[in-house]
Structures are given as C-alpha cells and as structure tokens.
Length: 396
Image (cartoon, rainbow, N blue to C red; front, side, top):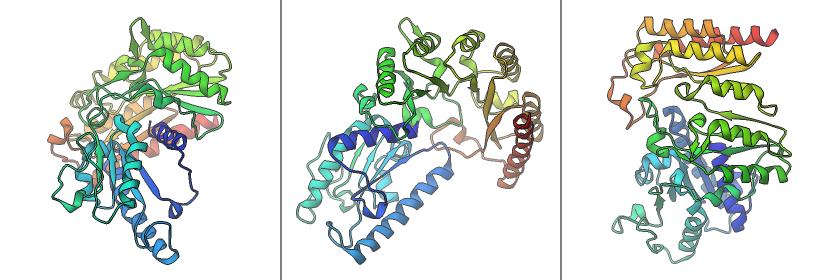
C-alpha cells in the first residue's frame, strides 16, 4: 500500500513540475512515507529524519546551496505516522515542516508550494493559514512555517491517474482504502479510516492506463480485498472483469481476510487464466482464545477448512500467511497451537512478527505481559520451522 502511495505522491509532484534527484543531499524537499503497524518501523523513521537533517545541514555548510547555508531541506512526514501523531510530530521532530495523512496526499503539491513561498519571505514570516491548519498556534515559534493536513476522509479519484509507476512491467492498483475489521492489535482503521471501495470502472480504467504504458502485470491492493463491494459488484465479479482486460498478462491480489474468504472465490480463481494461483491468508494465531482476543472473527477450525478447500480446488496453489507471536496473555499452550498449525498447514511462506502494542488500539489496554526474550524465542522457533517447510517445498 505504501509503495503505491509513494508512486501517487511522486506522480503528483512530477506533474506539478518537480524533479527527482539521485541523492538526498541534493534534495530541496525530502518526504518520508511511513507505516505505524509496528513500533520498530516508527522508531526507524524518527531516527532517519534526524540523521538526514544533520547530514543535509552539514553538507550545505560545506558546499553551499541555493538555500541559505546551514538550513535543511523542506521535510515532510506522510502516511500512517502522520495521521497517528498529527501536529505532535513537530514536537517529536522539529525538523519536520509538514505532516499529511493518507487521505490528504492530494494536497501535498500545494502545501510544498506554500512552504517554498514562506522560505523566500523575510525571516520569521509565516504563510497564511490554509484550511485552518497552518499554523494553529501563532504564539508558538515551534509552529512557524508548519503545515499539517489530517482531516480528510476520502481521496479524490484523480490521484490514481497521474501515470507514474516505479516498475516498468508491474503496477499496484488500489481497489479499497482503509479497513473496518478493527482487529484488536491493529492501528490501520484508526490511521487509514473505515473501508472505502473505489468504483469498479475507475479501477478498470487505471489498469488500462497502466497497460498502455507497457505494464501488463497487476496486483490489486486492499487491507481486505475480498470485502470489496459496490452496488451490484462483488470482489468475485471484479476479478472476472479484470481477467477480461485486453493486454493484461497476469494479475493477483493482496490481502485476504479469512472471514471474507469462500469456496466460491476459490472456484472463480481456478477458472481465471490470467490470475496467479496464490493466496495470502493471514492466520495471526492458531489459538482460538487468542484469535477471539484479537477480534479476528473466525476460529482455528474454520481456517483449516478454508485451507483444505483452497488446496482441493486450486491444485499447487501457493499459500502464505501472517503470524503474531507474544500477543498479551499468550500462554505456552497458545503458542504451541500456532506452532502446530504452521506444521500442519505447511505454508509456502510466512511473515512472522513479534507483538508490539500500538497506541489507540483495543489491545493497547492489555498488559504487554510476554517478555521480550520469550517473544524472540517463540519467533525464532516458528521462523526455523517455516524455513524448513519452505526449503522442502522449494526443493520439491
């Protein structure tokens, strides 16, 4: 999702007249597109902003720049962290000039324009307040030349049609934004909003535009793709329409939620000649008790039945998953159930994570009572098991 968002922002800026540079030291504007799913990801962003700010300031002092010597480029924080921290991001990292949430990225070119104009004005001057967001506290020097936009609900459709893609053969196409599942550990609904589905004709149009540019491989994106629904249009019907697009060579989709996955989907997948036969189906835990605490909406037995149906209907289909170890109160027996499920299902690949509390989520109110050492131990055990399984599958 963030790869595609970065392409969208790049396309908006390129079409506005901005040019990309090959090294950040040369940049007048640096934008960090961020994720809040794990604490480790956030920590890396704060560290990188500070590191690059210092290096840019040092570089400009040594070599000079069109900007005033000793200043750093305009720095933007966008994506989930921007929505999560909002204006408090300036307190955490004063080097940041603007903060833009996922639903407001269409405003980035205008925001940068306002900041560029303000930097050309006399020292201490401020840009006019725009949309009531810049600055909110005119008495605080912290908010001089600071802009944040985090109140948007839906993205305008046109941002997906800038024509910019990083890859020359493959394109990511968003079919839905946000999520309404509210898994207890997950921050996504709080930073990306409730699920919102794009109109299917707009999706088809974007795919056709990508094909015209020579990109004939497509991945349909959504936090929960198989929940896609429009009046008279289901995810299954969308797959059929995509399969019929002329010039398309192959496509796939990610991510599926088990509770919205069905035998009907598998039957349609098996019959679509352009659709890659692979399914990413996050289990998260093999323990029914933990699954209930996670608010996943299904039980271990239901998931295993889905896997059995998938492999019966789609011969040699690839199956991958996500797993969280160390969720609050996860006892040794709960972990054992997850471990045994992995051994039983034999995934082609698994993304295995150590639980970290995310502020604002339901699980954040629970004590993070599994020690770091125990989380690492459980992570290592499942990782080792999955590597052995993957090695045997690949060898076969």
